[in-house]
Amino acid sequence: MVRLSASTTAAEQEIAQAAVELHSARTVSLPAIAPGTVSANFVLVFDSSRRPERADFLDGDPTLSAARAQLQEKDYPLKFPDVSSVKLIRRAKVSCSNSKCSLELLPAESMIAGEGPRAAAATR
Image (tube, rainbow, N blue to C red; front, side, top):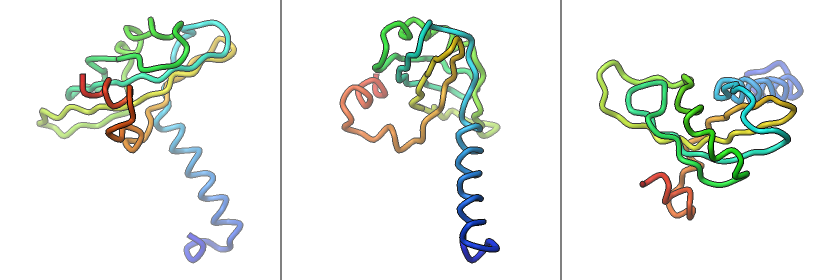
């Protein structure tokens, strides 16, 4: 990055901006689901659609476990090939604070086999 940028400082700023843009691209706004500041992890299963066919609660604040139906009603920033029978499994973190909630689709690396309940929920 430093060789492509005007300076080390410019490279650091571009990297920081890219991180912000990546977070924004994989974050979806949700209506208020729970009061207070809470968070929970879910597994979403997509079957050639931008809406998940399943949303499974993994762990976190139990007040968010009832949000599964709401999570299945949202469109997510995913793309599938035109003709596909591929299923995508994504881990997601739902966070609520100050009457606002959001869902962040986490990187695929977060679904590494053998991570206890996360891996078990992904294979159900």
